[in-house]
Image (cartoon, rainbow, N blue to C red):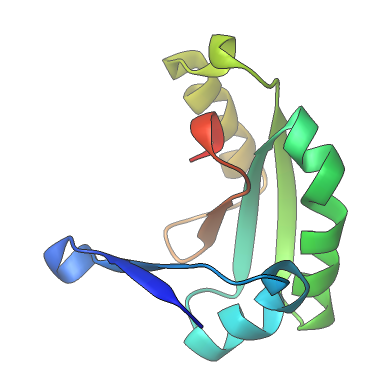
Length: 109
C-alpha cells in the first residue's frame, strides 16, 4: 500500500492511499493493532455516501465502531462542533485507548 508519513517524531503516523481501501480498511486496521474500537467522524454528506461501507468493513473484521455525524460545511469548523463530538464520544465511553477515523477531508480531519 502506498503510504505518506506525517513526520511528528514519536507521534508520526501514515496516511494510506489506495483505490478500494474502504472495503479492506477493517483488516488493515486489525493488522496494525491500533485500537479495538473506533469513532468515525464525518459530515452528513460524506457519512451518507461512505459511512455504511466503512462500518461494514470494520465490523466484518471484528472492529467495534460508532459513526458520529455533524453538519457539512465551513459553519461546522468551530470549537462548538469539537465540543459536541467530544461530548458524544465521552457519552459512548470512548477513552484514550480507542481510535478515531476522519472520514472525508476538511472539517472531519
